[in-house]
Amino acid sequence: MKLQLLSDLHLESEAFDPQPAPGAELLVLAGDIDSGWTALERFSGWPQPVLFVPGNHEFDRRDVDAARLGLSARCRALGLTLLDDDSVVHVGADGRRVRFLGSTRWCDFDLFGPARRDKAMRAATYFVRVMQATRGGAPFDPAAVREVALASRAWLARELSRRGGDWDATVVVTHYAPSLSSADPRYGTQPTTASFCNADDDLLALADVWLHGHLHCRHDYALPRAAGGATRVVCNARGLDAKGEPEGYDPFRLIDV
Image (cartoon, one colour):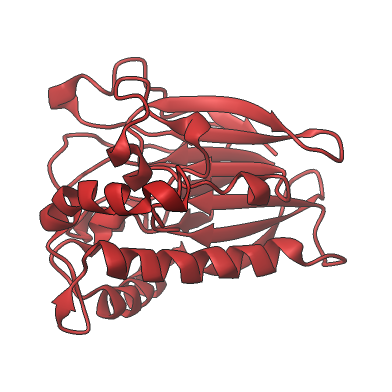
């Protein structure tokens, strides 16, 4: 199966016109497409099925739980498949059945271990202030982010541990990165990196391919599995023009599964 992967388009402010990639069988949107949700209309009637995993900015200035319900309704109306701690199986042109597991997978701040969690959560205060999101009438602060993140991680762990299902390969799609290996080389490993990457390396070994966004840089690497083989990790985030991040970006690249 050939996938087109787009993320971090930030169409609420960026002038970018997404187009279908020739030869793609499926479009995966890995979050931060449009904080206002309006630009999701661009993907209605897309020639291939569209899977959408929300990014953190899809929740800006909203109640997180209400936004999840609202996004679900919005995607149904537009004919998009929302994967918000949810799964779907698609059959490729080659007949292979590919299971997609999708989750925003918010950061749990354990990237550097429990001993450094508090420092990572303090560093995250800036990012949650930018979001201005709430949950249950309270600020969606780092503690609330961690609570939702751990629930999503538990869901992913359960789904990835399932065997004998009606699929030939498993692709995980998250907005947040699953490994420190996806850290943005411009910023290195600092406390704020735990607001972008999770330590999900143990879960990586249970997937064939892991797609993500959130980092405004591109990645394509493989992490070996103890049982043999490797998990391919791909990020094809566009980023912001003002920072020069789209330089070298290829929105038409295809990912084989």
